[in-house]
Length: 177
Image (cartoon, rainbow, N blue to C red; front, side, top):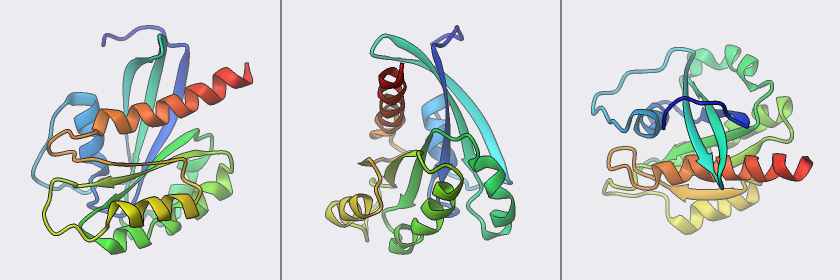
């Protein structure tokens, strides 16, 4: 979609442990590409994409936040003004799901009304350690509005994940008009 005027610009964070696929999800959504090699995000990597939901033009302002512990002290500056978040875990690493609370709690301290979608990435890989049922229960318990499984490698449900958070935000803002 070409660049044009949007009715809304939604600041959306991608959060989760390092190497769960946040950058790969953004690259797949914004550029329809995937890289096998892993490069650690340093601090934050911004991206944007123009789209349309229900006939309304929107801009996704995507903030890919570094998952490494080294960047814990600077993360809070990115949390202010956030509207939505895709919180990502690796379906082959249960610890990455267990650590989601470490992402949700500080985020909600700075943005209590943030809309959250939980994303189980790498659903294309064998040896899945996190079942759909376990992840959905985790999402419900932690007040994530939706849960979706993706594969940045194959592109499976990637656009749907971003459009899911976009639709939640659009509905919220249209209701507040």
